[in-house]
Length: 433
Image 1 (cartoon, rainbow, N blue to C red):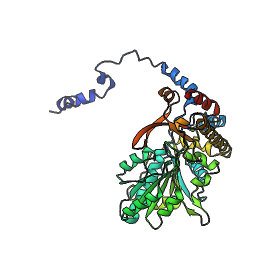
Image 2: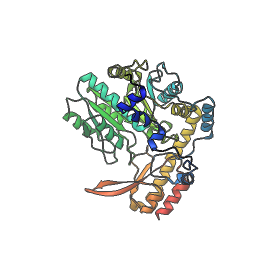
Image 3: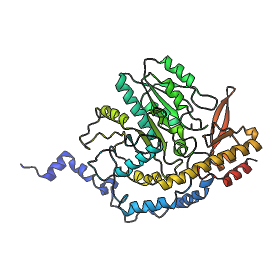
Image 4: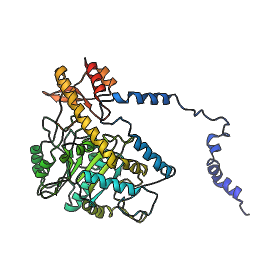
């Protein structure tokens, strides 16, 4: 006796499986004719109200200014060209030919070359890409450093950074299973190079992966790059710079040398890679980051990366931990690498420095009891003893406990960003009363 398909499905129970694959079966009933109300939520009104509060946000390093009108004109041009109307994907190495040509690698290469020049990288010898965030940029710096040091020595490196570094470094250390050597800090919060030297001597058999912070999260301290590099001479090492905030504006100030890749007279490299956030100083409307290194470092890394990654599918070794990558952000952020916007950034940087001086002087004059402090002249961060909670909430101030005489004393800080002008600072000073 032959078995029909219906009989087979009934015998095997497959009929139930097929039936439950339909949307109707999943609900056990026919789909209702009425649909939920998807009219705009009242929360959109709250969202709109936030635009009126943005200028009073003083506690975190985010530029709350609208980008200039030219940026939105650029967005419209990209939209008219078809970008963001269907799926683009910047998968792979932006400095290589891509088999998947629906990407914005041309924009990405050019903005990396332009920012590479700002940071003193040699023309046409720079490599990098636009990342998802500053943390993503740090992840690539640490991963490349770990990979190179392990391949050169056969020994897993230890990672050196201070407790003043951004908390993402602690997360990434744990993610990559690296042993953390905690380096002490000076009074201003910067890395103590003498302690670094002692910690390096205590771990002679391990290569050193060092993360230096150019603008620590709370105090705004700057780790001394050249002094750190001097302690690493003669040792297998990799130095990555986390310059999330300061790396954006320092090139437009008299302190540009702090983030330059090379130094005179021999043009030797001061560090191996750098991470800079796009949504902080620049005011890019969503999180993104720059990761920049040299082509020679990337080539060495790629040789090792290719051993753990089969390049057949996309016809190249991508060079990035992330596979599919946002193609809209590089095209949009390309605007911030233009000469016209560099000029705007220079003005913003000067205003930030001036307004930080203003806030510090006013607080020292009228609120000395709060012990206002600026870690260094490069910083636009002023920290002080924590004021009343109503001010913490009104101005979205970040707070943290700082050790004083073996006790934790609550402090707050103001990060002077391009949107923080004298008007809002004067209002804040009045509220301190």
